[in-house]
Image (cartoon, rainbow, N blue to C red):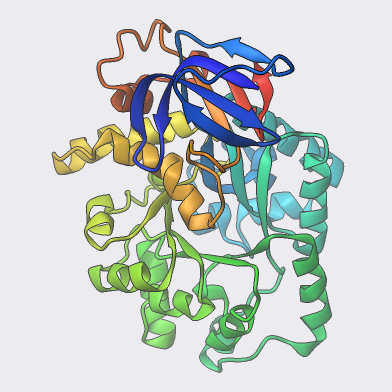
Length: 396
């Protein structure tokens, strides 16, 4: 396919190019330059008036709880989403796979329509949970990264004794790994150092929630005498999720030992847990990705996530984060954290992108494209979504 006369946000710095051509071959961007000569056999589309941006990477989701939207609104964090006794856990265990699957599928279609071309799911339910999600995704053209989880959690006494991962569960864990892209651990407070070290040996993606709440930080220090983040690093994670209350020293260590942090500000705020200190993360040289977290408490909408960061940081800290940096969190940085050729419009990368209508009522005139996308664009401004070089939603 040859796309003519289109504006783009190009490369890892999302540079605005007002007019260029893009050649897409197989599933990748092949050539990006002005006045590419069209091949007779090649489909050519004039995209005057459109802006192409990288597809959004929703780097942290739990779509299994799509069935439980807005349940237990007035409960505490643990009462809502604790992996052992929370309302979410009870819902997942007491709902049929068919019912769960239908609502998970709805969420996937919702993400596509909102420009999310890749999502990373921390999938509960062990092997059965992973298999269910793969079945749901079998006929949906969204790019997914599934991080499975054993339904195995240790209590305070077991963590203090540093009990090992049970040998009786080893074969179950290996079967899980074969079906997913890596592991998404609930947190250090449900696993001993020995277990986290056991999980650290796998060659696939490793990720873990950390320092999401003040209570979880206090609990870690009380049980082990160490910060929750220090313990989470025992997993040797590729990335950490949340880090809402991470200390300056923790963040410096994370910047050296992981590929980055995925933050979920709307979810943290919905749970009355504040928002992460993005400025401190940036000063600590952490690569920051963006996720929408639990569908139970939050819509899977990266436009709303970016807009929220843009405004709430100004409201709280009286200092606005550059809109380009926020847009990078939703695109470029996600690709870096996942170590995948996604999130950037450049030759050789997978052709995942969003086509925005520059003349949309909410966008025109676009004096600052990055700012317009971050706090003015929405699902209604999308003309089409492309994944792997194919238009899978809308048309151009």
